[in-house]
Structure formats: structure tokens, C-alpha cells
Length: 357
Image (cartoon, rainbow, N blue to C red; front, side):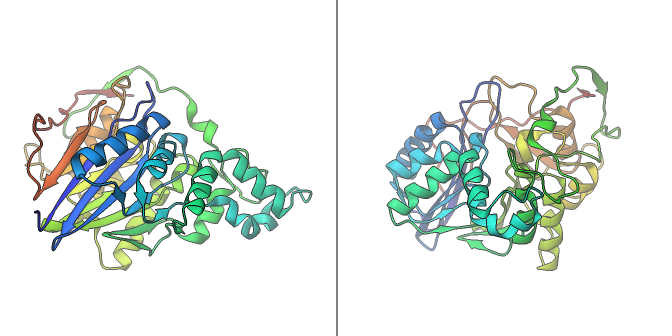
């Protein structure tokens, strides 16, 4: 019987050339074990999550089921987890429940609270289904907002007021008084194939990346696990959300640079981080040849070799974090639990001298 330990598993998401997130965590402290599922990938991922928890965690109980934001590649698999396992708490945002808070900002006065609620429920069908499944099973539902505690984790972002602003920029929302937002379709243009040179001292990662408002609404989590492991889970959060997370953490006496384990935001996309932000979250650039004492995990599809972006991977390494990409395979960080038969040590990504322009 384990008295203290943790296992953090990044489960591969079956989504072709697209990426998604599915994370399971088992934490034991003083002989008491808690199981977390943080996002569920696609529908096909749901069964992988269920099977993984049964086989490796040897339980059918999920203490905390967490959806960071309602993108289909993060939420779809959670319905199977809800169907097949005993879920104790569901943490998810319910945008339709905020319609009355933003209705006065909608420019079309023909739109009512009810019609806005219906619009959000219709555009976020899987999220609404997950809520209904929890209600049918009498599972309590909580919205993860800044300041909330979810077991070993503390929510850094979003603040409820900012979340209401972000909802206005969700896909299929009517025009509002929101002066600027990055619509979800705007960010779909293809990255150039052309490459540029980098070395340890030459960094090409941009300072001005932007992502969608739905991505910015992601719940950002700071965790403290046994053996003093500090964890930062970022989902698809962008520059604004992560900067707000940093500020909030500092105000509460936590410098996120203490984190040993970091989830690379949005599968290693270039528009969610910048050199300045990474200096705040991870630390300043280290001299070439320094020991990389931290680790960054990123969930990537085996059919999507362009993620994580090489410029992003290099930026993490310069600041002391080894980068582990799942590339279609489950990757586990553990302490206190024995190794799993047949599993091998992870191999970090190399430093790249040719990166995307």
C-alpha cells in the first residue's frame, strides 16, 4: 500500500492531425488517494481514459472530473467517463448560465436571455450533455473560477468577470459591445512551411501571439503534490490568461517559476506563449549547457509532427525545461509508485536549429 505518491498521465488523443488533451492524475497522501481526470479528448479518447484508470489506478472512482473549456477535443471523451465510472464532482464552466450577466452588452435588442441561453447551449452541445448527465446522477457541478480549490489544485484563471467578457467572443455569439476579440475561426490560417535558424542565443518566438476567447477561458490550475512537486496545467490558455494567472499567483504569494512540471499550452502552439511570458512562468534564459531541471509535457498526435512548434520547444528548453511530447503514446511522470511493466523512460525533444518562421 502506497502512503505517498503521484502519477500524472498524458493520454493520447485520437484525432488524426489535430491535437487534444486528456490527463489523468492519481495522488496519494497519508494513505488517502484521489483521482483526477482533466479534459477527455475526443469521443474515442473516453474509453482509453476509462481503461487506463481501471488498469493502472485500480479503481472505478474519479474524485474530480474537470473540463478546462468546452472545445470538442477536450470535452468529448468525458461523457464516457461519466457513463462508466463513479464521478464524485464535476468541474466545468456553464456559459449558458451567464446569459443574464451579459445580455445588456448584446447589440441586437431582439435577443433575450432565453434565446441567448439557447444559442449557447446549442453551440456547446457536448458541454450541455455533460451537465445533464451529472444532474441525472446527482453529481455536484462547480464552475472552476479564480480562487477555487479542487483537491490538490488551485484555480488561477479565469476570474468570473473576465469569463463573462470572454463568452461574448465565443463562436456563434451575436455582436456585443466587446471592442476586440479573437474569433475562433480567425486563427485557422496555416503556418508557413518556411524555416529560420535558431541557436541557444537566437530566439525567434514572437511576443504578440493571440488565441481565441474560448481558449483564453481555459481553467488554469496550480497544484502541489507529494515530494513537493509544483504543477502548472494550462490547457489551451493564451497570453492574456496566463499573464493574469501569473499576476494572481504573485498576489497570493506564489511565484510560478517554482513549478517543476508544466503543461505546454495549446499543444505547443506559437500563439499562446511569448519570451516575456515564459520568463515569468518558467524563468529567465539559462546559459547554454545548463542542466534542465524542469519538465514540460505536451499532448500531441502521432499524425501531427508540426506540434509542438520547434520555436516553442526551444524556448522552454532555454529556460530550463525538458520537453516531453506524447506523439500518440501515453507518457507518465510518477513518484512513490512503482514503475509499470513494459514502460520505458521518456525521451525529451532535442534542441532545434531550424524552426518555423
